[in-house]
Image (cartoon, rainbow, N blue to C red; front, side, top):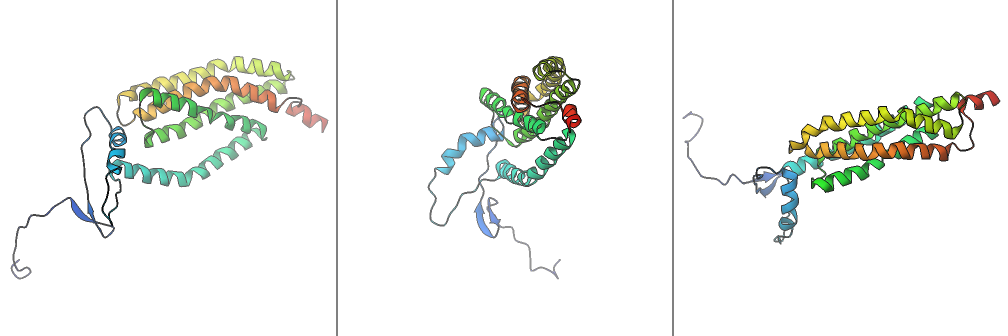
Length: 240
């Protein structure tokens, strides 16, 4: 060691000041109180910290979980269009038409109302896990919509009038759709006590409960509006 170095000296240094992207950076860290998550604490202190006047040449940037969440959401947002496009194409190929997929995809925005009510009622923030819950929720609603719309098509192909087919299909599919939603909601209930996954569970539970009820009401109405005066698919093919 003596041939390599001149000696060893111990010097105190400020470990909070370092360079980030070659810029001298001062990092201020804090712990999260018991019973709260980082998103809740961040929402409480953000406005007060951002109101602090900074000298010329200084700038403020948030790190930690907020920065990681923003990076994850940005990465996720780049891939979402392709995912939704693939889901849309699959639904179109499934029915071989455009009206049925249109009805199903019009049901998806209804879940946002339930998500908003659930998060506002519980006081939880819309975190990254809540975003993941919202994306998975869209798949659940599309599945429920496919089950209902396909049943209506099958009854119309059997020669049943439009209104009768809509009423019969909605009645027969009521139990499967509701039970599927209830089992999912009950499965997410244990996560309500988890600070990290609470937002995701509330998002799925509130959005699914609200949208399931609207699906059983809005899907038949939209079907009647879009297919009014149109013959079933089999009759259209026969006439051609």
